[in-house]
Length: 425
Image (cartoon, rainbow, N blue to C red):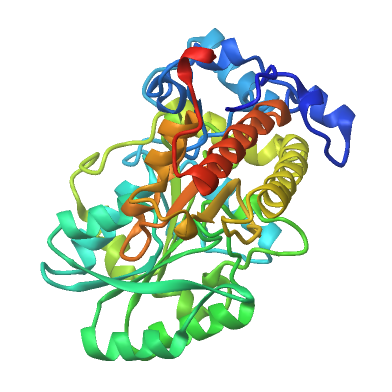
């Protein structure tokens, strides 16, 4: 049975302090459970009252103060009319800020190549619709963010899996196998997610150079989802694949957003840097607004995050690094039946539950521990033994999640039966 400790009590777990003043100032060290349960977002609204959610990729932390201030100021001014940056009236509203942001990663993108969209999924759909034909192959690294796989198949294209596999050295992909797959399937597009969701890998320069060489040799368009770049943990460093050379930049669509690192996905604002000139021309030739227009609040939030939010982001990364270590240490010491590799970026842990021998480990943890995790079944072939755990919450809540999971695993291993009694909570 899970611990009866107050999940908002951060004394329930010990962790290595990094900068406690910053953590407290940003509201990262303690969260009120009742406040979280009043939220209307899907993470908390879609679970039963006795379930702790650790599934969808939303953080529990409060909004970054610079973002909150920018949104509040915009609303107080009543500045919600038609924006001056509408596509037919001027340059993309985030071109300058995106270019400045990429300087953090030693990349000088072309501001004129920047186009904003409501989200990354929309942008990928535009790429597939414009650059491929029905039946064309699209390489997707698996495990994959589920909407990517769904998008490819719903649009009548072939999802060509490129498995990233767990080895003794961590998660890696077989580039020679990828070359053989491409030679056989002749796909048109290569989707790269770096940092990777859900494994947390940050690809090395050597890996990216090899992927770039494969794309160039096979005349493929590269879609690079780099939305998690700001959440890489030192010493790992994000490298935009388009920064490697002008040749790869010209065939790469880089996609990013402040919404993931700064936790405002509901404002729906993404930025793309479009290398292929034919794609830029097709988008610009389309009727105004056929692809939708980014909303004013999403633009203002993104500008505030990228211009003034890095102190908050540093504190968040510190908390996430601590939480990652707490989770991984807990699994090694208390749940050795499970397998994991510490993610090099983001707040998601890809957890191998194969030794539990459950048809769906996520359902097991929901029923036996009253913890909601993301099922691996939707992440692609061969992922059914995995779950994805979101650890972006306060230490006390995370401790309760781990206590519940530990009790469920222990009872399952020893008795094969359930370990959680909802009536006792």
